[in-house]
Image (cartoon, rainbow, N blue to C red; front, side):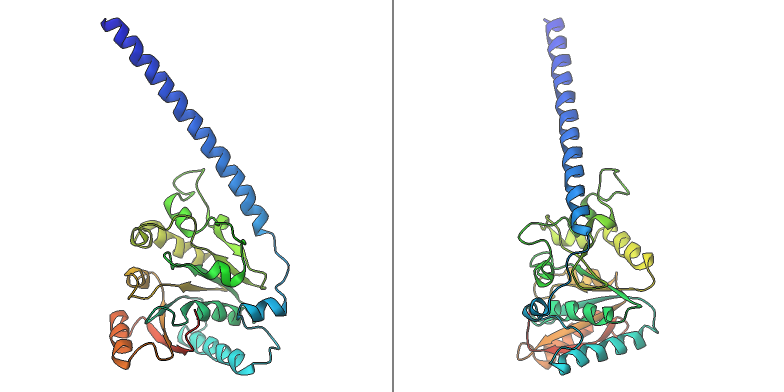
Length: 272
């Protein structure tokens, strides 16, 4: 009886190992296929047309609404003065949801990229309500591999994991790239508070001295993620939608980040 039990255990162990190996092969194949898709996506897309930029509310040279264009150019100048011309990571967070943080992140990136000596990278860290892939029109309706996938399984820990290059997408705007949220969006605080997130920011900052990074973060009213992310960035800008927040609410949120981090406040018409 003991001999039969031992034989059954050996057979079960062998089958379990075979299943594990098969799963590993399938995962590796899936990774290679997805990586091939990423490489295809990384090919520079056609430039966005003026009609597309208008529809997506993204600034561009020669646009008729000079006031909006010049506003973002002035913001660019101010931020460069604060940073002494050095590249930086800037987080934009709304005081209240729907106060224009995503709109401002997109257009600040576009404003920096108007200078052909600078590149811009938008990182969508609004894990619960990501919009940057839609704003830029990247990936269509597909779920893109992005930040959370990288954090969960970085290449530094596993050769089959994701590299930073795997999750950076061209946008059709010269010198502007995007890191979308990714497929996994549960337990957002665990992602943003991880050591892998810190390593990600360090790598994207240090890789290119001409790269300026804009982090689209949720409001503190929606999630504590912004407070955690603030420790990983150089500067924070609050976005205030017209009629959405009182002075006391703005002051309270500003105090949460402190004078050392807070670079300023942008008042918007409440675009998303």
